[in-house]
Amino acid sequence: MTEREEAVVRLLFEGQANKEIAASLEISEHTVKEHLKRIRKKLNVANRAGIVAHFARPLLRNPEKKLRRAYR
Image (cartoon, rainbow, N blue to C red; front, top):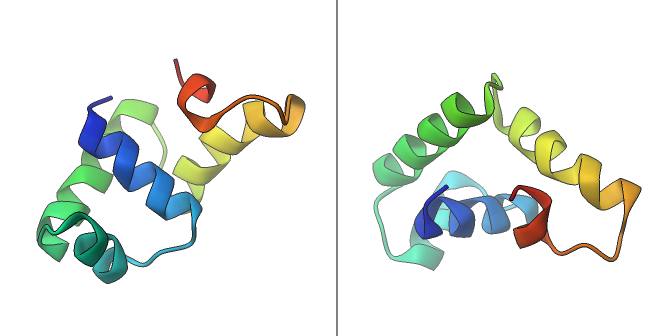
């Protein structure tokens, strides 16, 4: 996963909408959607909830883990 995709996931975890993620990262909303599309494809999930669930599972099993370690 690229650094930018990681940043999108972190903001997604904070509950930000695409428009908010775009503003936070100073990119277009279209670019956010493209990042999310690539992330979904890499994780083989269908939607935003699938992305969050993918990264939340390891964190729920071991809350001390940081998000960065959860998908490496």
